[in-house]
Amino acid sequence: MRVASIFAAGLIGLCGMASFAAAEGGHTMVTPDEVKWGPAPKVLPAGAEAAVLFGDPTKEGLFALRLKVPSGYAIAPHTHPVHEVVTVVSGAINLGMGETADPGAAKALPAGSFIALPPGMAHFARFDEPTVIQITTTGPWAIKYVNPADDPQKSQ
Image (tube, rainbow, N blue to C red):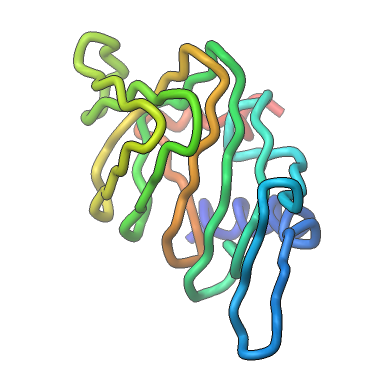
């Protein structure tokens, strides 16, 4: 899939910055001060930062990724090929379902909120304050914008 391969290429550098604190026994523990932030993948609008906490989003298997966005950040309607589980760590997300970014249809979800989206569900997001979300899913992770012109990679 073209979208997945483009996204995978963008995440290769990000995965190298992953903040792993693995101990014997194969478990991972990461404290907030161990999170290593870097630029978000180019498939996302400019201005976000990302940190891989566990796994590798470019490969098959489970991973956890944090996304830190500024106030006013928005992600146009898009889908993912697999389930996506999101937790709002800080701030708030205005999340809406559908192929059109209708702010009136979005639900405000504050810190502590949980979101589980099935594969192929079109959704969009807007952030009115600085926010950190954690995405847990299986790779390779990909985003397919409903309107291909919304893909930030098209304007680069």
